[in-house]
Length: 389
Ligand SMILES: [Zn+2]
Image 1 (cartoon, rainbow, N blue to C red):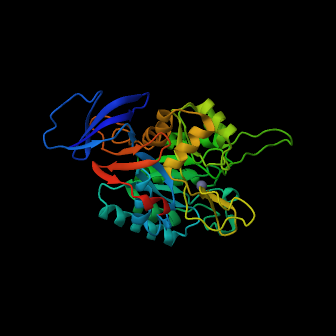
Image 2: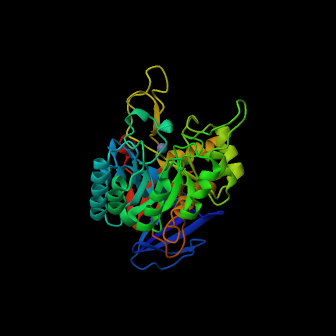
Image 3: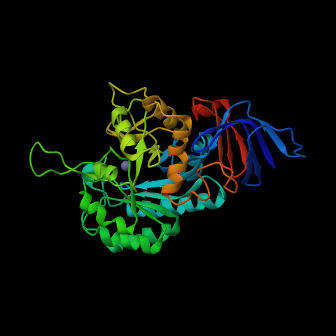
């Protein structure tokens, strides 16, 4: 048993000041409001000294970080994010990978999950292969252009099986409906996302019955078509804003490069705090363009110097969000833990501090500087050199 005392416990709608969190094994056993003197027997006790204790971060869209990509070194990548409070991650594979590399990566991630049983990797986010090449960072590399054919995808879908929590597609691609149908047949619990796309709201709505409920990095790598010059089109971003049931992923970097602060505020204004979820979309970065943005710590660039994802971790994303929008700590945690857990159907298990849930906790100060992490009831203290890792 582990007892965390003198904590500001971050609940979904408020902060419980001076609270106690009780952990038994890998589960949250209870919460109590004040540190009433109590005989905890030989339980391990931890004095949080007024630090915030929030639910572990859930990063559903993350490619790699700390020098390690999930497709090649999933265990090391997961460790990097765990140190920043990410107790649940979906290893995110993407459209630039060939079929062989998809298969290889799925095998590697599965092997890492077997080794780190009860660890942060809980499945896959498949960002592709069927995106719109016009909205990729490097369309010339995209090897999944042309007709969508079952002989190309069945092997990947079968191997990922029930671990594929999200399949992101561009709904305007020919043959996408059969692909999505097959993905749902293999894993009925999988969610469908619209991303790297210029689909019309009608094309997006057509996939609703197959579980389309997520907008992949909303306001980023999307477009729209218009018939008349000078008019405004309605694309995936607008379709997401219109649909109350859809979750919007948000990349929240320090300069507001992916999504500028005014658009972040607009998105939250329309969707509400319960339907926006932070993702890192983190990569192992190439070189920044020589003249600018070189020292920005949370942007990532591809080999050609184009913006390609981020180098965020979820603690940084929360800090940026509070700075850009003035939202509260509990709202930031909601967007970094509760909402993504709901979006992938895991809220019964993770995403908030509640009795019976997995004991995944972030212990941080008011600036989201992570001091300790608890994953499955296991206490992990951050080392000073972690920031350089
Ligand atoms: Zn993307």
